[in-house]
Length: 470
Image (cartoon, rainbow, N blue to C red; front, side, top):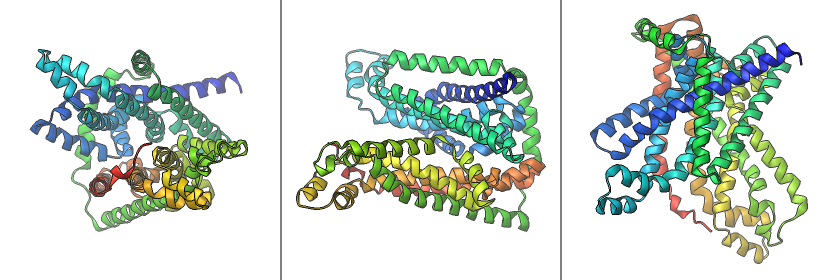
């Protein structure tokens, strides 16, 4: 590879890392104070929760388009689009984590004269810390994947290069950057796994400090200074929204919106169901009690190790490649349209659910399965009858969460030609037809909000307490 090509690869990867670091910095610095407001409760918290729910429902594609309009092309737009979305996510999840911690220690400290801040820092934060770190690490992984989305609409990084290579038929370059992206996600996953499980607090804080510095550097290295982009953004946003209102409610536009909504919903359903069915055998392949023979009572078997390693490798790669990149690959094989989007979500959902289901099964009670084996049943029958049913509630919860996520993803996949609302949104954005664009955006937000509300009500009815720990 020539020095020029190496420089191109370096700059592309650094732009992606810069977008992710800047977005996480924004999400943590703004999301944590908002989480404290939510955790305190009250009328202000309820109003804030509603506003954050609305922001979370806006697909990253829409936020990226608005950010590009307001701030111009380049990494700054990507930082603000992803930063805004994950600010809402961090605020909600961190508030839930803080709210789940028992208040006994904090109340005891306050009873002895400690002020509220001291009681919070000493009596609550240490117990919530593992959950806070775990979700922060997961958010960074998710932002790395989502950076492809903002790149597609002009925020730079690997996403922009993937679209360019696919458009001109440069499949070798496309495959190379998909591999680079997958490797980047795997590396981040390994690092964050260390932070989630065994890292002391000082190392976690140092890692976040490094991310903050990288985010600041990403701003400093952009061609357009951030303050100039922010200074001009109100005028650009006013022009954008002024040109978009009122939404186009003509018959043709509504027909396209209805067709796109149906396509997005079908893509999400097909991707979730297909992925869940495919995830079960993969989960059995990597679940330690099954893969290593413990459920059979025979102990570890060396010949099962290659199958387990291959299964874990396939799952790691499938999780590492963002759905939008998988959608680009699927288009090459099955052509444009919803089939490509469904295939992309099947692959990604299968790999994500396989890991989650395997982890749930490893925590489950396997006494019934071992009793079946002792009575002469095969390992497969013991897994299907004695092992899997106990985990079904938590498996159903994971599947519902993925369905919510897939609905959002299905509205994005269309921007690379995989059908659905995303295709209509992307087409109108490229043509600067803002009235129909607003219509499709509002339909996409309404779809996500409806699915989130329905899924949340279903999850509340699941008997998750049936999952026992060993």
